[in-house]
Image (cartoon, rainbow, N blue to C red):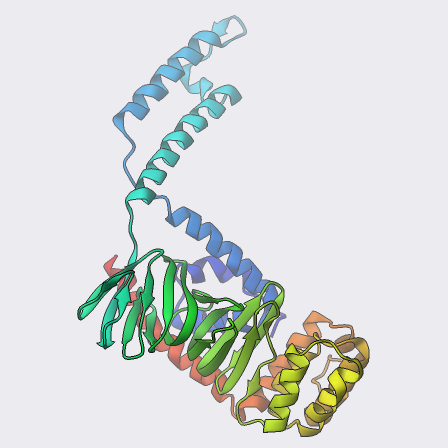
Length: 395
């Protein structure tokens, strides 16, 4: 899969210029390739900075200032006993630097003026009860602007339109805040409570910050709840979600769940039909204080209870355990699903990135049986692609 990266297509993909089939191919690749995903984040950052600069006509005084500067430079510069023409001055470094400074100063002045006046918002609809935006109750509809909190009490529910890329339903006793909305990033903060998201956008366009991690959608549907201690529980019903905190990341597919804890970040994802003892052992490995003998036998229970589908959790544990325990996890995984050609025991134990990704691609088939996880993701993303293109055509 990773012999053909998608770097050359990232700019066109980010701008929605690829054909649907090509867009799906790039999106699927980004799910499993950290290298291309990192480059995609850089492309999005560049696009974000460019899109924040509005297309506003330059003031007439700019050209007068440039002409005056050009005349002054022409009077000062002489080469071989004669003045250079005004066109020649254009290629002098001193003129280029001065002119660039003028253009940048005017450009940034316009940019900050634009930013101070712009007030992006999301539409909010009341589903029940009396949701509040700030201190004000909303009627049937309201607007959630940047920095504002939306809160529901025990009898209230609300629905948020996430720009043009999806919807979020807010359950009772929930508090969320709009942090950012732009063509390249939409971001909420979930301080407490429970929300359900349905997103039909390219990967990593919608984010939810919690006290213990960040949920990044990969074209999906999911629920996310935060408890009073700041821990969260993610349940994915369609597609994939990435849970992140600093350099720790968990990739959670449909049918799976993953918990987070303050100060630790995401735990290990697991399918919700795993045995109770498997899930209890996983929680002990993820979040309990360090102990000897693989958290007092938790790894023994985990490996003895593992099914083929539970290689989802085992794959994530490879990079989170020490060398001795990593070897045990590898052996258990290999007995359940032999590694594909090119993936060696030594390479995996050394955490070779290419081998880990190749094995993950192979394991995905066993997690879903008939690749239903990937098909579900494609279905959600394709359905939303038409909505995104329709919106872009109206801009």
